[in-house]
Image (cartoon, rainbow, N blue to C red; front, side, top):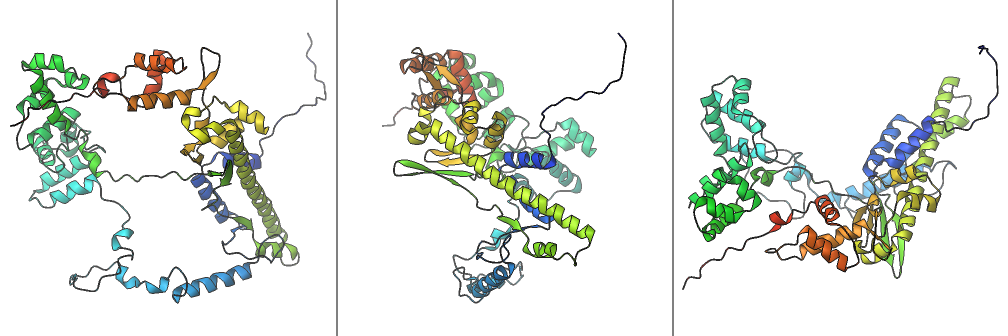
Length: 490
């Protein structure tokens, strides 16, 4: 077969990922806080983008609101607040009381600020944690340079639970000290508050806490020191046999151990709690539901009026400046349209979810129906990948609580009569059965499967175990509680 070079025409259709399209897809999958940061970053880079003030009156340029009226309203508002005329009452606050000044002659006899005024401690940037608490205790001890360096090194290598992540050998290598010096510094850290801090594992943490009890229970120490495996599995019958005591004494020692804190460092955790801010609100009004998008803290973008005026003055700008402003104007218009399209898409998806899962909004998770991305995609005429991006990191506030949009998609479990039940409804029922069980005789996975079958939910034992693990519910042997019977004193 001879090779030859020839020309031919072929008509094809393909999707070209332009930079604008990639940007629109990126904005679509961003969460609410990430979107706010991205828009503010675009405002810093693009001079044609600016934020509309909340108190903005109509008028001005046809493509952008008037900046003169905005400035006038802002100056009037700020002036009124400083004079103490506005509702904020800024003029009523004496900011000298909250200056970062700590005089040596401070006295509590001085006039104190009002009770509803902000405190100086409200301006502290960081919350003291476990490390700060331990270092504060070390300042009250008379330590030489070596001990202070070793103790600070050990404290700096504690995890969030208060456990030491290094061995004695590693401490010796890093600090160039002997094993006796490293062990002495470790014992010093373990003597600090809270009890059990500086332990290398859970067993050592429990032993350190038992050593500090006023009435030390030697049986509890033996259980933790010699039979940690039986303690974790709650095999109290075998534990009594190994220790050579009756089960009553074992239960009393177990009750003493259960009062200890397995993770002593958690009490001084300074991790910030990130609260979920919903992107959409679904509010029930009479017998209908109303969908409302949450636009708080999102910048309301518009084109800059000043630069739009400059673009109309052809003699003022040179070719390079005019090309620069036109390019940024096109980018700004595309960003504004992308944000509007994102909000409309979220609204359509929530509207479709409300149609498919209306029983959930009325009754709760037990009424969840099977739903997949394809159902919503076909309902609103979009691709499944678009629905997946919209439902990622987006939350909705419903009468039943706050849920992620992906929560409403769940697999189907077919009953004996052929009807499908949502997997989330089965998980909710399993959680309810576990919460209502007898703690002395908890329900096994097999028993849970039998109870679900009576409610027309045919679920195998392995499926029950899988759902239980996904909900982080402990097995039956770890949920069983032992009641300690104490003798009544006459």
